[in-house]
Figure 1 (cartoon, rainbow, N blue to C red):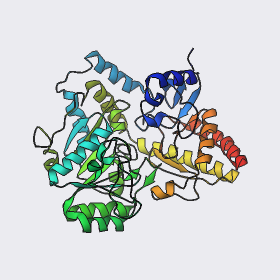
Figure 2: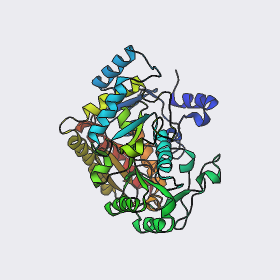
Figure 3: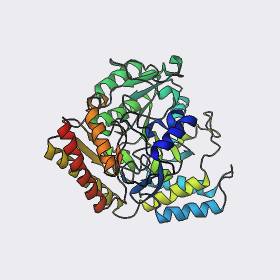
Length: 429
């Protein structure tokens, strides 16, 4: 019978690195990745039969937990009618209408299949709408692996990005300006110097790929004001935060209205659905209405959309987000208390059903702070938790996720495991 180790050995013969996405690898923490066999509620089971309390939730989408009966029913019904048609379906209209109804900034929305597609298309649309070339992104924010976004941050102010991936020509990223997250003064300086050629600013209002780092209200509102002043578009990446930190996403928490919003993860309910949308005059620059080309053979796949649509309806139940936030708060409060009891330097925070934890003395405000986290302590803590049946992200730089299926028993079991894990970390210091 195959084990995690034997499957990893086998996978490396046919799949680069043995995984189909680097985030699944255990490269930074060491050891073999776990190969999952099944999941239900807030739990997953690997091929060795080990049960885990799941805090990655397929990296965010599983806000209701795994195998919710109403989601499974909706998917089964859709499958019975056909897997894909390559034609328009009524369900595409239904999910677009649902997104429009929930998110006030959305007048039209285009479905795609991945967050990367949403980011790439949103930037192309912003350039097409404004007739400008330069884009601003922020250090530590991830918006998919399209070429123009795979750039490193410069060491000084207003440094144009150099490619951080082989295969990306410098000419592709020469118009990408990388600035410090949560630095409104630097953002203002960028607009003063390049404002007439800036097509858009793209940002995660709550960054989730340098662990979890919320934008400050001053920072988020500065970019809205500057984009309006200089005629650039504001793209808020809600692939991770949309319907996760609040029903109306991070933009509702900050009271900011983007020109374009990117969605993913929760809107697919665990299947590959993503989208970008915004005000009508911008969106109608997209083909077939306008000159900005974007297409996708499986965009709006009827089975995937059925899954996402059922998810969007269920998360609107009264009190859903209050309960989700309460369980997430209970988790991080317990983790902090467990670390404090052992004298381990540690802090944590949460927004809605999303949380960040850091081996730092205080909460980070940007990428430079996150980079100071104690990686050795995290790696030890990760494996101690994994050995006790708690599955956290295998990376110091990823946010965590709580689902509606994480009941008190699961939270209490996690905190009990953390007490033992922090004790091991403390002894290793």
